[in-house]
Image (cartoon, rainbow, N blue to C red):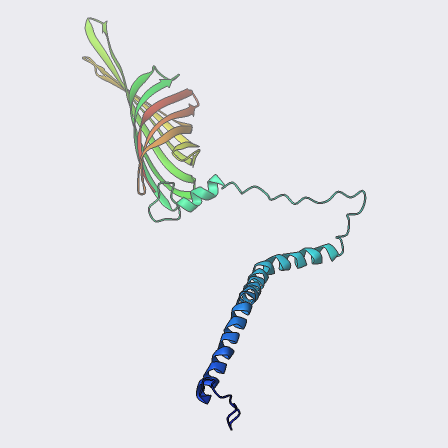
Length: 282
C-alpha cells in the first residue's frame, strides 16, 4: 500500500532532517577521501619547489663564475711582442744600504752625543817622554800639551797646540886639578803647531801638523869654580799623534794617545816620543 505522501506502507519512516544529515556525511567522507588521495602529490610539489629554490641559490656563484670565464674567453687576445725584441723584465732594486757617514750625522743630531761635536773645543794632555837628539845625549822626562781648536767638519777638528817637554841628563863627576867637578844637564823641547785631528772610526783618531820649535839646554858644573852654560836653538817642528777614546761622556773625551814630535835646527835635530792621556771637551 502506498500512502498519500508516496511512501510505501510498512516501511520505516525516516525523517527528512535525518535524510539530509546522511547526505552531508557522505559528502564529507568523499571530500576526505579526495584530500587523502591528493595529499602525497601536494607534499611532493612543495618539496620540488623548495629544492628548486635552494638549488638556484647554490648555483648562483657557479653561474657567475661561468659567465666571467666565458667573457674572458671571448675577449680579444693581447698583442704579441714584436719579433726579435726581448720583453722587458722589471727587476726591483735591492733595498739601499745606509751610508755610515749619514748614520753618524743622524746620531749626532741629538743633544747628548757620543761622537765628535761641532764648535769650539779645548784639550790638555800629559805624557811620559823619551828624548833623542844629535845635539846631546838621549834623556827621559815628561811633557804637557795645551790645545784650542774648532771643528772644521763633524769628524775633523783644527787645533792650535803648544807642546812642551822637560828632560834631565845624568850627572857626571870627574877629578880635575885635585878637585871634584860634577855636571848636570837640563833640557827643554817646545813647539807651537797647527794640527788637524780626524776620526778614522767611531773612537780612533789621527792628528798631524807643523809649526815652530825651540830647544834649550842648561849645563851646571858644581866645583870651586862654578860654571854654567846655556844653549838655545830655534827651528821648525812637526808633530803626529794617534789616539783612542776610552771614555766618552756627553761632550768630554778621555783618550789614550801617543805622539812623535820632530824638531829641525841648524846644528842638528831632535825627536821626542810621548805616551800618555789626553782630555778633550767638544
